[in-house]
Image (cartoon, rainbow, N blue to C red; front, side, top):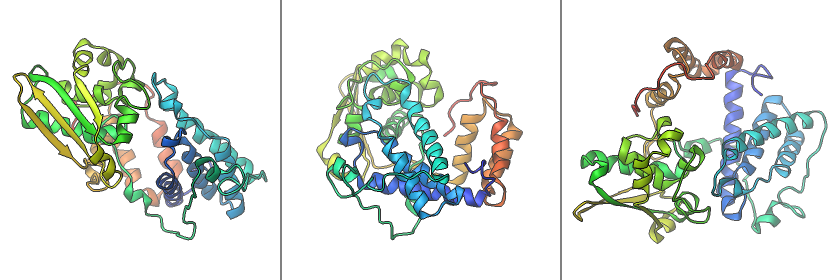
Length: 354
């Protein structure tokens, strides 16, 4: 949308901050996934809010765009239930596409259901709770409470993977040393990725299943010492070594970790070694969490690691420089650079450096 409106980088960053604010405030107010809906619901609102800002819509038209986008994007949490399909990955993109299209319609005079939140059949009635998005608070600080993923997995798996890798390095573990692995997490992480409410996690067979599976993620981290794109390739997921090890990974919801969530997103990892000795590690955060944010240099390192099969060094440098000075250029300049990225890998991916 920023490219469509020939927005400056500064305008784009403001629209993005507004979108994050809407997304995070709704997420904090309503336990969407626990009520059986997909978190793409709030994405419809945030994408519409950001798009409306870039189009210069007034408050009324912006409200129409947010309401109409949300009303037609009440996505079901079943998209995350086992067996997880490829729709899991594209569902947010479809929501974003629809939100942008709806916002363009509202620019042309379409109106949205004003009763979306507090009226008859609105979201408050649907969720059976009040929803206060604090509209009088004009701060744009929610982005500081968000997470950057260090590893290629769902957010619930980040601290688990980090703890597993720390144990592996500290104790020089090999997979052959391991008898069993015990993971203790908060209830939401267990339900979502540990074999709870969203289904059995005993046999991941595709990327979409593996990156939402704490058993697989812990097992492959122990085996490979990394959880990157290579660990989500089909042939890696289906290999006998990781399929065998994940059968010896147990996951449970711990009451104390559940009570501490969301202030703490902690996990405990225990490894029982051949011979009976156990080693444990508990972690509250990881590099990329709000309490331990990634530095700019680390973000650039992650970008280079993920993008190097698809870009040359010069193009990567130009993209990094454009983003570093984004408030001083047009978004179209960045979009032109991104358009030069190859859609297929040209070079083999280097080993994880994070």
